[in-house]
Length: 559
Image 1 (tube, rainbow, N blue to C red):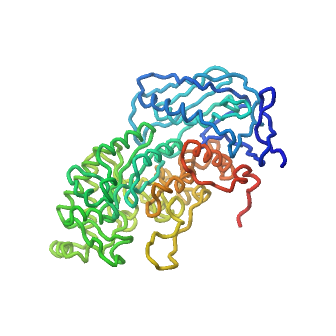
Image 2 (cartoon, helix red, strand yellow):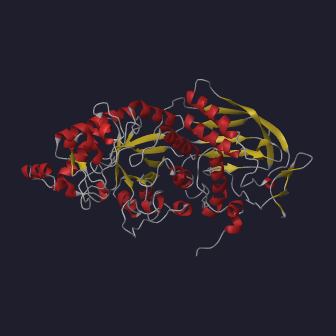
């Protein structure tokens, strides 16, 4: 077998380019940093990194202190035989000096985290002397440390950790404020360790939102203080519940990593599980066959005619408003089926007595629910049906999340609403595996698989005016839970969510106007996937091994 051009070591202790093995070549056209920084400059010098590197900052900053401890472990991880060796021909073969100190300067000492929190930072790594991180908030500093950690490489040739291509000068900030992932923990329950692991990987990708879709028709895992029977009878078991202490712990864990946790209270649709604990507040529970009563089994919606329903919903909102400290609260409102209510004798009698249509009653219920959310000084998020299908008069401070096709982005922004983009035809990560059916009927179609480049190629600004595009506050990719659980969720999310992360952080063009293309991105995404693996995240492969090592050799035109 012929020698391949990958890194080795000479007798002089310098990089060598000949070891036995399959060929491997990545040109490192852009920094191996994901997502790509807004502005960057690099050189050709190599620095050794002291494994006892010191981060110098004000010691009373608890979030930063914990982060430094974490990153001491994350920075110094190595693979003696990486699938994608660094291209050492781009940097000096010997180390010019050693880096032993990083100074962190944070201007604003507050640890408040919200959508408008400043996440910008600058990172300077000179050829000699200390590296310097400057950020307005601790959360910008967290992003800077992550970038620093990705620049550090292990050199098998020098048998040490190094910073290649010094000096570095990076100025970075997010293009969009809201960069998230929806995780569905109702259809399948996720242990806290899996949620926390997801939060870790979100933070490495500079994503800042975990949209927690906790409750749905299939289960009610939230252990309410006021109504414990909802979880007692609506969860899969006592082992499949989240209590107040657990939720507060997740929220704090996320905050320490710069991630906001936004709860979604699924109501009044997709609400079968409420009816197991409090039957009087639900309609058409477990109607069989379910066709015509729900979009997905089991059937069941909240009974919108009952005062008791409003009492229970408002109390859950009260509890969540305290547990989830973020200023955003998702009030859902999607995929109701009117026949569920019109065939409920209690609802039908109410409509007749009050001379109302079912749509009018539905509107009153959801707008009252949203007003109760606002009473806690929360910004209301809803799914697009509220606006585009039901055409309810939503206040202009409502944030609309679009999921039914990318055309909805044009419609919501044209109407002047702030918008979060989650277009299912690009950013749904659960599709492409067939529809979730446990029946014997053949030929059940499923939506197409959104591979990484389809995810990356989606321009959320397409066909928008500048004024409309400015109303997009960000986006979320989603992992609905029909066919995802603890056994496979990471491979479904990563690295495709990384593609979303880069579009929402880096945008589509550099500050100088140069397009950020998938042809360049794949050269960074491949090693970034490997680094996530090294950190313990089971990210799926993007190609077969040879093409992972030699991406340029495997580029091919569209078929």
